[in-house]
Length: 455
Image (tube, rainbow, N blue to C red):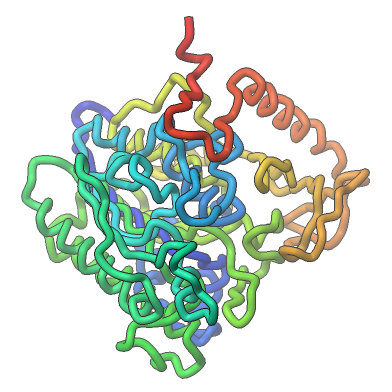
């Protein structure tokens, strides 16, 4: 961003466990029993990405979004039980922290899942204020479970916090609250925008909704509305909540000054009866299949991004970190490896192609696959979570354009692509040796440091 350009407000809405094939604009919607007219209309107003890629599940994706770094670097590899060291270490620089340095006011209303102890809540990590859940929605099932013992595990809570103050519990997160939470998150998000609309500073509003994470329980106003079950009811509610946020931006006179982003944190749920769909792709979250990697991403920015654009260029969730910092005119951290690439010029159409042509995909610390252009090389194959990993003596190569289901090994005819893929692996592994990852669960007092910052 040039010094003469006005910093836009940024609204980032993140759905939970929303597969590539659920929305109407991605081939789902009414076919899934749940029309999504508001999000479909949003896609017509900006850029719809067909090849936006994330990490294996909630925690890794959210850490990648907040830090611009692959989870194998940050140690935020997976969900762990409440109260244990988890999420992103205080040493990491987060997106809201960087944006605040550029003058942004920041707020988060929704699911955090990146730390549930003092020092690791959103209000400790760059957000001026937040309201939501520190972990995840399946915990609402715990207190209904026969034998649940609150003497050995905390009752799940909805929390709130403000910068410089301890976060506090405000309500039990149970099955009743599960139905109400996204309505509350939306109301608080709109209130934040209303309070900041006439201010002198731009704002960054992060709204990680809880739908469609299981249990999919819709607000009473939407329960039964689809006629085909709670999953579709919840998707209709999610579409409505996004529409409320879009309307608020417009009603407050902020539409032309706001970058509005809608995305999902990972592929669809695999457990029944909450299983979702990835459309034409195989797999779900917790796999390296395309259905686990690709999720919806829609970006609207009036006057900056052309309407009704559709692209199959590769983008990765770490790129959101770097791109939004670029949008804000802030400085990307230089004292640590940053994996995200700025896609600002591509979004604006000043360059034809994405800045990225591939990435490595880990589940925890295991390299599962490499994606480069329209090929993917699997080193470990698991088409369904918990079906048993198959470590391949000869990696399987798939041409995603010809074989979207990843069923036919193309190693013989397309084997030449293994060369550039191997170079990607070697380059990345070299950085891991030069800049060792933060150990998972590292205590706050442990400073991972940075070789880049040392003389």
